[in-house]
Image (cartoon, rainbow, N blue to C red):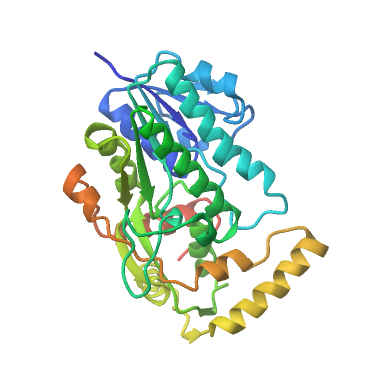
Length: 332
């Protein structure tokens, strides 16, 4: 029997890859999108578009009717906002709406997409699903809202709803047309706007492997458990060196002390909030997040789900080629 799956945020970066993976699997796929949403990431994909807002409980419930699985991938992913209210409405209240819709229609499995940003990172070690962390440890409204949404999903699982949580790290690849904050790092590098780097690090994953991890979590994940969908841990300098090798552009050689970067970000944030009303080049949240190397271990997903992400270089190459194709970066 054909599985009917609902994907929220299916026109977004990670979501469009989840939709494609489900279609390849043979699912009947329904995508919840807002009126007037940019659908270029779903061009040519055989899926049903249901118009509705994640913040509208009735719209979510109607979209979930008759579905066997729900993939709650939608999120307001920005690291600088003038008004935090819409972000909490989408990330937190939207998650409650999905969970309530799943209860109402007895959905067989809910995959909630969280983020490694909602996990703890021990000093000098790699974070895991069990690293202790609290809401007070979350830097910025994005991380706080995603942490709250994750807690709502885990609470629903304890109450009997079949919810599995996945924690993607930093997905990269083609079709990141906005781009995401991570994609903007690559675009700025390609445009020569990265003259220096901070001593920080992050975990990068091919977005296609991340999407496949969602399907593995639906098939093999244990309700109430979290699974990190990560790839390679790279320092920012290592990332720039990889990008340089692929793109032919030089990697920055100057390392900025954290205190200098923080001072710059404080000034830039003040100007953005009081004068330009536009995002700064480097937000205060981004710099504060960079204080720790965001390195993670996806061993649990490998053991329990059979998750096996490949090297990140192909995804970086795909991203570079895509940004050049759409004119976001100059040709080689």
